[in-house]
Length: 384
Image (cartoon, rainbow, N blue to C red; front, side, top):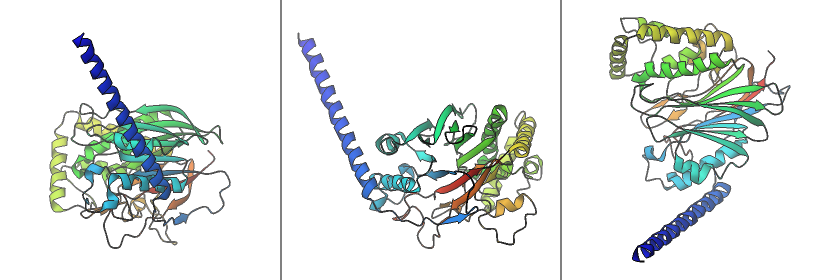
């Protein structure tokens, strides 16, 4: 009798607690939805137009590292608290009225409390990253695209042996307005340390192998690559001279913008990598896949002409690397481009969102809710 009473009391306590949690979550959701509708955002939506009158219906994509609250250092700014910052980010995304969006540095809390209830017109796909509590998120507008498949990649320590966050998610989608147009879309988040260039190259090679195996004509790779334009992973996309730097025993670093201590660490890591078993075979495999992908798909960044002048005449693939914006990530100790929207040759960019001029305060701040800036591209299909 006493035992049954204890069970009843326990179940009653559990039920009350669950109801209170549900009520609290509902209150948080209602509050966040109110903020999304009413919170002011800084509108500086200026675009660079490449095609003024597209011949066919276009589609748009946005990529945004929304900054995990764990990495928030500016706790003295009240507007950067999670419950105020995330609604502002959501409103920024909704204002662009995009067909596709790729977010990095989300968490399950952010997904459950904010994203899940804010994008009813989208199918939301998530995947937990390896080496962290972070997740990648893809939003697909239901009216425009049908999801055909999802592929999630294992980048755990037995695959990529490093410390820190990394993640890839791929979806294959069919355009409902153009039944023959199928897009293979990747949302990526690479490890941040410069010394992990070999590991980043291997992660990108996993994507290349997937592309070559699946033979999809239209490719988009979007996200936070944690790699500056002249780094090895980005030069792999353009099939540039990166292979010499790994095979050269003199540790040639190329045109990197690194401090001496960082260069010493990179050299040390390269020496370490060269001693690994099957290193040469691995690098040759990466090099060959980079070559095959480049020749078949001619991948390039949507922002690789950002700084070119009107009289620009392309001389080499290296030109694409040096015309990226000055930054997509702007913190008190790092300013450079590390976010990209990469696309294949059967797409043509119609317009891109301009990178705002940050003249005083570093990010995040009261105007910009993340330390990264969002990228936006509008694409038109081209004929094969």
